[in-house]
Length: 249
Image (cartoon, rainbow, N blue to C red):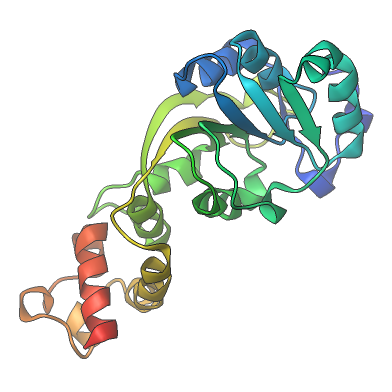
């Protein structure tokens, strides 16, 4: 990917574009889907992932909010547009929902990582591969009892099965950001209804704002076996169980 057009980058879209071809190829390979799979690409920029996606024979629907990149993609990959293997829509990913894809992929702007992650819940898909800020990824996969275990962790793990599959140096991007990144694989869970997780999050908010206190000091209807526990000692599933009892009793 060319890095000579710094005038194209804007703070509005949080543009930090991947220039490492090996990393881009790894991300696409990690989708591990058959040819002709329908792929939603979030914020393709100048098309570093797009090129590898099309090379794999995927049918790509690219969502790009910056009209300059959207127009560039239409020109660069015009033969794939004509064949129907690439569609480019100038839009914000957060404004779209309800669609179904085999896979979702993207290198996500750091400042809206959380919004994009949870917006995935408005789509049906088999697997997603996203590049996000490393610290944020570490919080997503954190284990109980660790400093990184948080309300974000619980909400993410109740909705998705997430694992870090690669660490990426900040030098793989242009302009070079201040932080390193990681690539994560995301597979949807169907254990809990979205509406119930959202209701439970009201309880999670209370518990994590008092994370050093015993649960009995924050909740009135806490089951006796959890009364002396602290929130970071309990798995997302246990916290969901506690929250549901608090809401329904």
